[in-house]
Length: 440
Image 1 (tube, helix red, strand yellow):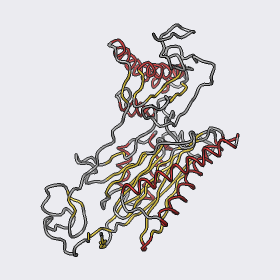
Image 2: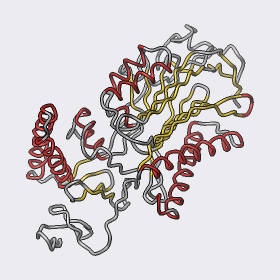
Image 3: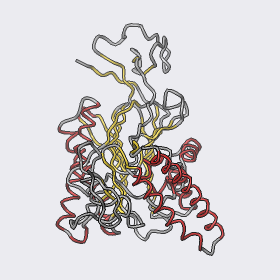
Image 4: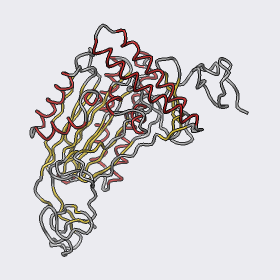
């Protein structure tokens, strides 16, 4: 038989630390708020505090419906303050938000009444274009059953012209621009960006880009993001030169190790320095090697892939390559919030995974093929909170100069309020000479 809350008498599960109804702590032990623990089955629940003093939990890949109701109630209370604003636009925005949240509340209540207790929060990223057939002449990827190469026109079932064991691979060119801006509201910039080259053996190069968005107080957040950038960059430079990976899986393992090295350094620093206790950061890395893109991500800084010819099999012009490790992103996934509502949601900064706030961290990784015409874009949430995906795509395609494109994006975010620091890194992929690579 399940126990009851001593404060409101509501039924609670035997291992609950907070009452799902009144939010009161059920024991004298201090509440654990880990905004960054991996959400895997068997792990302890991830807990967070809401603005109405209640708690939320993420356990495994599911969220309790009662916790979702707590989130909605907290959001309603937050928006109610806007109803007393002297600005008519603010009052109208608050009224619309409360009406939308009320609809969500009705939906959740109906699901609870029908006996549903949890809702899945697992996000599926888009499947990008697949190239199952390699051209024997130029190395370009082609879709299954294609007869001629979409890049050079060669017959795809012809024998390779360059000898047994060799593949003709494209050496792509990359034009890179990076910019970070404090925004219109914050006093300090807690974002860190980096874009540079790594010399690999055999006169090859890798191109490293990253965005980190710090948190935990002005000085601590700024330090955390900068430390994450420096540690991960140094690790990748050292290891990729001494032990260059040969496969996608090996590159992904290297990226995970680099991110975890940054996580450990930040976590250890916060433990011994009281002024930086609780600091953390997001970290999203893009590593471009030959015609391959390798991504690692923790938090809600994003990576996108764009191309006018489409980046998915259904022809979409853009795709987000990373998952936002935030509660609000999961509410969007399950249809409880629209992407536009998520941009202004009061709990949008609650992360359930970040760098430095726990001794270990799960790192999302993936690898994709690059094509001439691709655009790889990394950004902090200071951009996407003001500029939607369609506008990002439009600016990226309108501006052939990556420096001008990232400047336009930052300026647009500032024109719309600039409530947070804004960081953007853009890579334009162009065709280069072909080079022969021996395998065997």
